[in-house]
Every structure is written in structure tokens, then in C-alpha cells.
Image (tube, rainbow, N blue to C red; front, side, top):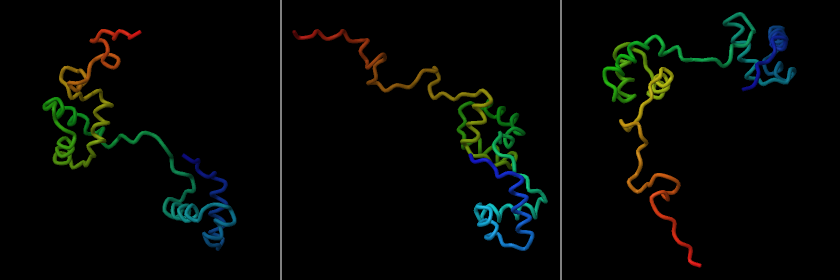
Length: 144
């Protein structure tokens, strides 16, 4: 991800535009994009600051307040699908969450979902265990 422009450049661009020049002129003069200048001036007018917004970081706070509800529902009905859980969360709390977000939330909270209750991988009937299924067959004699 690219770094934000420096506060010094932001201040110079803002003073250039506030001095009566256009956003297009400022972008050409400072060699920045027009969209940067337009968004900078809009943010400056609404917030009053030229500082860049923070980038990165964790954004998991949406489901954290509903942790107890979600974990209780999973404990009650362990074979619940993510779309069902999403629908119940929406009905109970009004919070809309994508099934993939719910899945990531539950994995972060220590829940792993396995399709096979024995905890083994599901294999096709033709698949033999071992390297290429050779552990059950004696090696073929070489014709010499």
C-alpha cells in the first residue's frame, strides 16, 4: 500500500488552493493527482485537519459485541450453517454480517468446522493411503 503524502505537501497544496487557484492547477504545480487535491480539500473543509487518515489495522469490532450470542448459538446447534447464523444474528440484534465474516470470527475464537465427525479427511473410495497408493501393493518385479 502506498504511503500517504507528507503533511508539509498537504499544507502547501491546501494553501495554494485557498489562495484562489483551482484544484487542477494545484495538481499540475505539485505533480499530484487531481483526485488527491479534490479529496484533500473536501476532507479539510469537513474535518478541519490535513492529517492523513490512519491506514491498516484490525477491523473486527463489528462482531465482537455479539460474541456471547454467536458462541451460545453455536453451542446450542453445532451443525448450523453460516447463512443460518447470519440470519439469526440479523433477526436478534439487527447486525448484518456476511457468512464469510462469521466464519472468520468463529475461527479466530477457536472454532474449527470439520465435515467428518471422526476428524479425518474425507477420501474418495478409489483413493489409497500412502504415496500414490503403493503401500498396499507389492512392488512389481522388473522384467530383465
